[in-house]
Length: 195
Ligand code: GLN
Image 1 (cartoon, rainbow, N blue to C red):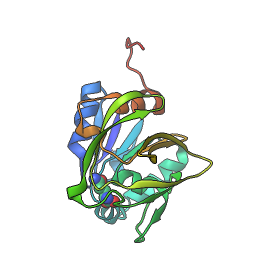
Image 2: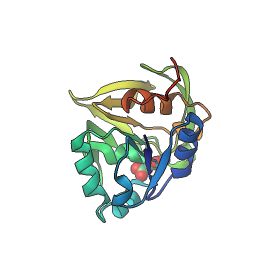
Image 3: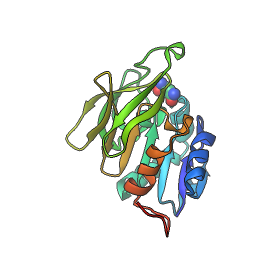
Image 4: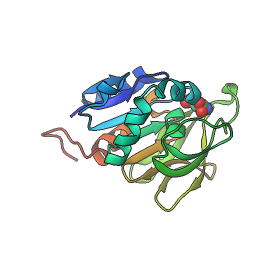
């Protein structure tokens, strides 16, 4: 089993580090060949317009196929924007993999980035979350389910095998969100590991 981390731009190393700490083998994905044989894929935060621009060289077309084939994916921040069905504001190529709408940069400018703790369904309480110019979820369709809110606004959702979060769990030491992706969404558990 190998979990890919889309490595076109953004917080790539941080996700690799969190997955490493969980003991999950990883591969940084820069081109379509890197997408073969993965058990799951993380789409990091960064700048969604930059990632979309770089992805339109063929990587996004392959990702659209893999979404249709049911490859589990986890998008954080800009990665969530790329996985959403509808992106409000400026048009940008995206994957439409989960039935939600998002508004980009909804939590304001970089200077307004903040940290919070969240209660996340199926994961637990007091999960630390770093928000950096975070997109917010503005609509959740019938095919998706809200897992967490911040100040009443949905910030984490799941739809089928697609998990999305407005925030950056990879910038904290808490591994519960990555563990949930690997074990529950990808359905992988290391041999001999329990609970
Ligand atoms: N708002 C940024 C975007 O849509 C995302 C910021 C982030 O990933 N930290 O590109």
